[in-house]
Length: 91
Image (cartoon, rainbow, N blue to C red; front, side, top):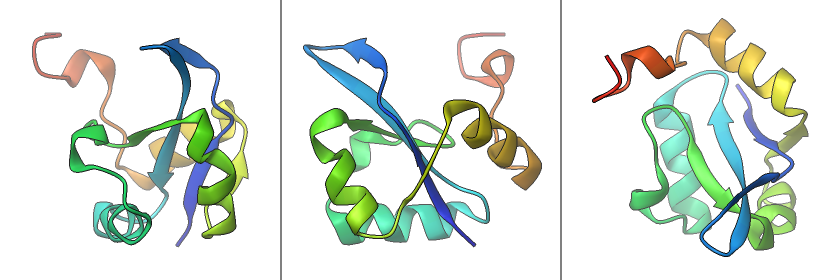
């Protein structure tokens, strides 16, 4: 049971964004997000989008830093991944 975070590298809205996921359950992910004060609007079906300025804080709170590739592999393996083609409006 681990909450994972990748290095922010996705530019949008004047900052750079990364992803926070759980390799176990959405309940674990939501509990971590609530504990660290991430807004519910930053949740996107299987992950939280997190700005670069929160990265160090989230790692200090217990998120395990991983590469983007490892994050996706572990999210898929967990069965929690929502594929792009399965996202609302993408069918």
